[in-house]
Length: 283
Image 1 (tube, helix red, strand yellow):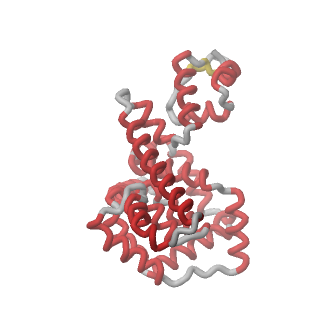
Image 2: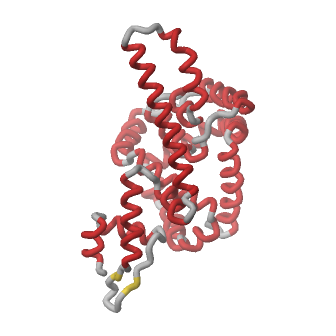
Image 3: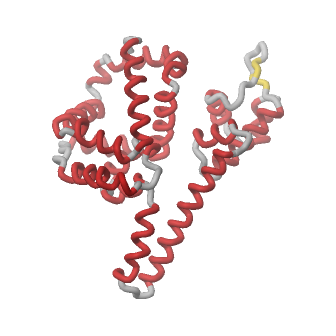
């Protein structure tokens, strides 16, 4: 069937259908006039994707669900959602008790239980509130979804202490305006999707580099252009990189994160290997 019929049957936009094709969920054949021809099976897959997206599943989660006939990925997602739901319900109950006039000290035990079941990401965002803090930790979110293990607490606390005593990153007024304008056009959802792609690229470096060879060459050329070098966001990024180098973040904070988050440690090792492949290819 043609695109219009698929859109009608699935309720998806043309761009969404093409995006899912780009991601490899479907592979419609092309007619001589370049029109895509979709099978009933591909329409069924698109319907499933649409449902899982409405239920809040990420592209990466959906990929796992569709690839595993035993549905172990779906079981994992459900278990994680149930834990989060239980935590949220417990928080609501405590808020109700406080509304009824209960003293904060009397709910300390329940708060300790909540703290033990929170993800590392939630703890960090709570420790460093605000938009910049959320954006900073969001780039690590995929590796901070686990709870903090007891034998990792010391490393986590040292990491918090380092960040809290790290010199402030100073921005002038023009830089603040540039960040504010950029933040208006980039949502947290956009950032999460970028991070998903970045993670997949790291863990499948050879395949990703081959598929995106032309794009990388264009990007490298753009990075050397005056348009890029004079962009205020580029200057802020370079300024931030220098600030982190000068403050010892890479030498002190990163090793601590690798210790309290095994998932980040694995990613870091893959990142080094992928970076070496980029260097070898002169990208």
